[in-house]
Length: 219
Image (cartoon, rainbow, N blue to C red; front, side, top):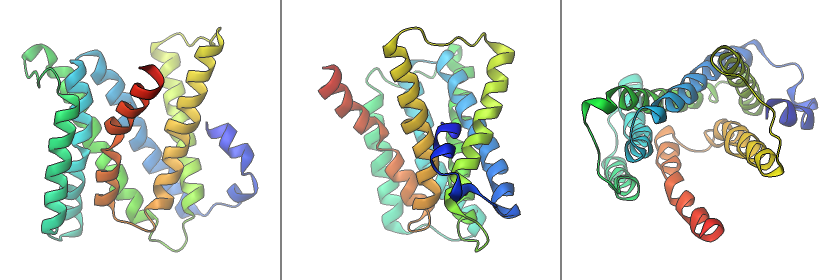
């Protein structure tokens, strides 16, 4: 995704500032932890838990923002967060939240996913407020950092294989370009015009859209 999107916008990526590169590396590492922890988490917990717990970033984002910025969340924001959490639970916990000890490791990694994701959103929101930082460059370069670290980890713990069937290629390219690439690039651009808490609430709509896509395209 980094190379594809980078080739399409070479001119926009020239001469990045030191501040842009600094935040790209920092946030890219955090997103690497997000993807690594959720990948490990889904291996060791139930499907319901793996769907619900990472979405708790909608709670951790305003909490971390309040601690970092030392400001009390608005009442309407607290209400929106509570409603989003309840909605997320109704959508994902179809079999209930299983808190048995056999899922402890997976649940722990899923919670780490939620916390680090919330921290990534807050740090991105803080970064785009700085004058010497280019949000688009930040999105692309942080994607590169996350991709490189993930590739290294893949070669250490797995045996990477090239897809051999068209449907596999389509799935990989779609996930890389749209679900990961565009998502990481759009986030810093969007945070120029909205708050971190609102972004977290919007992102919790993921299972809603997943349900619509599954209904119309999978049946």
